[in-house]
Length: 442
Image (cartoon, rainbow, N blue to C red; front, side, top):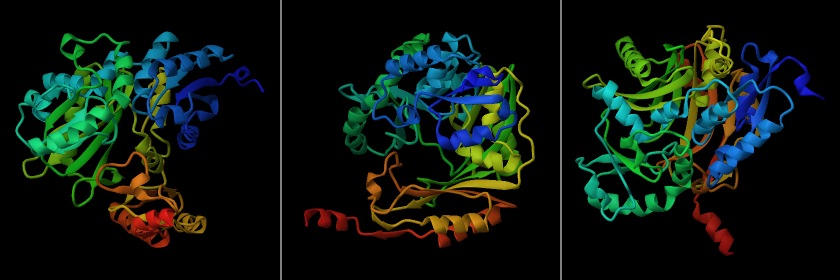
C-alpha cells in the first residue's frame, strides 16, 4: 500500500500515541491528512534519559527515508519534542517558530528575563543559581520561603518549597543527582540556538529560585499567534486540592469573574505580541490572589496542552490539535467553533493521599457502566491491582493519581455531581503497603 500516492498531506507527529491520534483524526479536514509517528511515543515521553543528538539523528533519518512529501512536523509534548520540532523544521524547510523563540518560553530563566521586560508587575522575583557550586544558597538573595526548580523540567519534577537553610540543604543532594537526567539533554538542545550573553552561562543543570506567588486560583488561557495576531481559544481553570498542593481537575470554560478573565487575556496579549512567538500555539498559567486581584504568570508553553484536548473537543466539537495542524500547513485556524455536545467539560485527576497497595481496581464492566450513564466519558485507570502507589512513575511529591476521568456536562455543578457518581461506580480497594513487603519476605 503506497500511502504517498494519494494527495493527502503527510503530517509527522513527534511521539504520536493512540490517544492523541484519535483526537487528530477528529479534527476538521482530517480525511485529507496522513498522520505518521516521528519517533516512538515511549522514546520521546518515557525514557530515563534523553540521548538528544541521537534522537534528532533518528528523526532526521526517518524523514529522509520517507518516500512521499513531508508537509508538516508537529508536536504537543514538552521537552525534548518542543525543541526538536523547530530544529527539524529548519532542516526540511518547513514553517515553525525559530528555536530561540521556543526557548524564550521553555528555558525558565530566559523566559523570566523576557517577561521582566514586558510584564514586570506580573512575575515573581527570581534568581538563577548553580546547584553544583560550593555554596549555592549564597547566590539566592531572596527571603524564605521560595520555590526552586530546574531551568528545564516538566510537571513538578525537582520542584521544592524551601522555607529554611536546612530544607535547602536537605533537597540539594536530590537535585544534584537527578537534574542531569533532563539537564544534559537540554544542553544539547541549547547548542543549536544563539543565546544572548545573559543566558549563555545558565544551562540545563542550573536552577531558578522564585518568590512564592500568593494566591490559590489558577487559570490557563490557550490560543495561537497567526501572522503576529494573538487569538484566544479559551480559558481553563486549574483546580487544586484543599492543601493547594496537587491538581484535582482542569475545568473548561473558566468560572472566574469576567474582570479577571479579561485581565489574564490582556496580559497574555501584551506578552505574546512583544515576545516574538509567531505562527505557534500557546498555553499560559496564571495565579490569581483574590485578596488583592493580583495576577502572576507561572509559565508559558509554546504549544497546545494535550491535557485539555478532550475538553475542547467536548465543548467545541473538535480538539485543539486542529490549531497546530493548520499552523504547520500555513493556514489560518478557524478555531474554536461551538459545535460540541456539552457546555462545559473537565479532566478529573482522582487522587489518593498515602502510599497503599492496590487490592482492586475498577473493572471493564464498571467503566462501561460509567460510559452508559454519561456518554462521551473517557476513563483511564492509572493504578492497577497489585501496584504499590509509591512505585507509580512521574507523580507529584504530595499525592498519587489513581485514575483520570474526562467528563462533559451542561454546567459546572453537574460536572462535579457526575464525577462523584463516577467515583461511586468505579471501585478501588487499598491495603497497607507493608502487606506486600511481608508477602515478599514470606
